[in-house]
Amino acid sequence: MSTVIYWLRQDLRLDDNAALLAACHGSRLLPVYCHAPAQDSGWGFARRGRHLQAFTRQALDGLRQSLRLRGSELGEFTGSPADVLPRLARHVGASHVVCEHIAAPEEEADVAALRHAGLQVETLWQSSLYAPQQLPFALECLPMAFTPFKRELEQAALLPAAPLAAPETLPPLPSGWHTSEIPPCVEPAIEPRSSFPYHLPPFHGSEAAARAHLAHYLQRGLPHRYKATRDRLYGPDFSTKLSPWLACGALSPRRVWQALKEFEAEQGASEGSDWIGFELMWRDYFRFLLLRHGAKLFHAAGLSRQPAPGHDASAFRRWCDGKTGQPLVDAAMRELAASGYLSNRLRQVVASYLIYDCGCDWRAGAAWFEAQLIDYDVYSNQGNWLYIAGRGTDPRGGRRFNPQRQTDEHDAQGSYRALWGTP
Image (cartoon, rainbow, N blue to C red; front, side, top):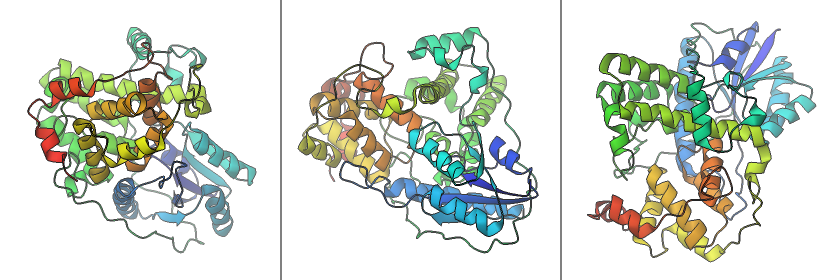
């Protein structure tokens, strides 16, 4: 093998990166990231919003710095991988591409297009805590609910593999490499009310910021209170805040698990620290669900036999704009648009409100979350929206949240609504 293109996708890190290590077997290496061109969501708004673009920019800048310390560089291009990578491969004399495996229809189609163009593409699965081959059942037998999935993993006493160390050196760049096409920078939103203020250095998208945040979270003993605080609506410490870095791949779930177990060895396990592991298992479940069922999770019926949902375009627009007239929902939607972040509790509340109170298509809501969330992840986004809509793996057939009850339980004093109650 001579020159290898390492195509970065949702794995913007050097640590615990099996695909990168595989790409290093070539004599020369060119790390590349493809920025998607502007796209419409199909629902009347841009597919990718400013928050995720800005956070990704931070992650890529951090990655470039790490690559340069190892004598390498990051090539950035705007365009579809099917257009960019074959042309680049011809320019640098490469025929082999290595990347992580993302089991979503568009991402699978990108890989197929590269192979059709004559490139050898090696994909490696590396975004989950447990590897698919570790599961105590065949993927075709994946339980159709999370609880039996979790029970089977616990009964099998599975342990995640240890995270892989980052390479100390990298192969040299190919001689034909000259420059990249870095797109215009999208400035982060400066929003002091945000629970994830990514305009501040501790919350930047880089791998270094991710590792520092994880260490700081553990040093303060916050895992012990996680279960008691995880349903709060705002603030930097009520949850781990690891999801944006996990979503873009600046942080590995196996690295989180290892750090969590080291924390428990020193400070003792607790219901809170156990619950963080439980959340990582949920994250895995949605990954295996998409790996198992593929494009079905993007269809109107999902995994159900229900008819296609109706859709009220005007009600959807009011929901997006935070103008439904329901105070908690409107405050949450304003926070989402202004900051790119929303607590897990509020994500469930607003999703339920869109589906059951506004009478809208769940896929429109999933698309809006894709456009707005700084921690957008195709697996969790599809899985959670289908779950709320009763078209996924919820054994209850969907989750409808009463917004007034949620207000009484989680914002009785009105502090969250006061914080986000005005545009």
